[in-house]
Amino acid sequence: MTRTRNSRNGRAAERERARTTRRDTLLVLLSRAERGVLSRPEAALLRTAVEAELAAGDQARRAAGGQQAAVCRAQQRLVAAEQAIREIEAERDEHTERLKTAAGLAAVLCADFPGEAWSLAKALRALCVGELTPQQTLDSLAH
Image 1 (cartoon, rainbow, N blue to C red):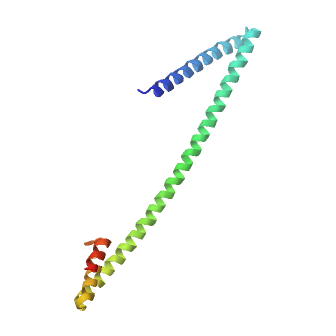
Image 2 (cartoon, one colour; image 1 turned 180 degrees about the horizontal axis):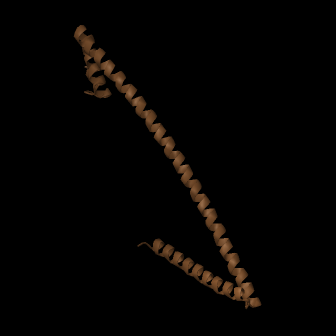
Image 3 (cartoon, rainbow, N blue to C red; image 1 turned 30 degrees about the vertical axis):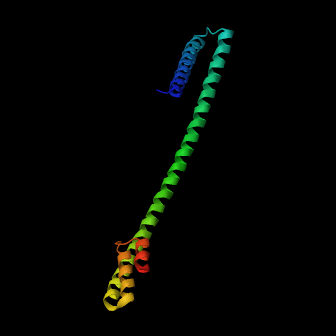
């Protein structure tokens, strides 16, 4: 365990002990108030304990609201990312179809063209079907 984690766990345990003590005190004071035997100092202590609980509740609600907003933003980013993926996949599919068509045309050209035109058509077909990279295609035509 890291020093930070130990420190964080220690603070959390300390907050939990303080919360338990405050709640136990509240229960005793409320019980005494219900029986009508609450003294003035105890009434002041009850008020302080209730105010502390109210403040803790307010803070927890603010934290929860912030967490909910963060979750909402993350969900919106996820939806946008999924949409972008769908768009890119559609573009990829469109380009794949175009390359298949270009490869087919290049294959037809290979059969019909003599000499250098044949080499160009053959290189184009190899590029379209993935047999050559763009750089390899350019290099093969440079020779």
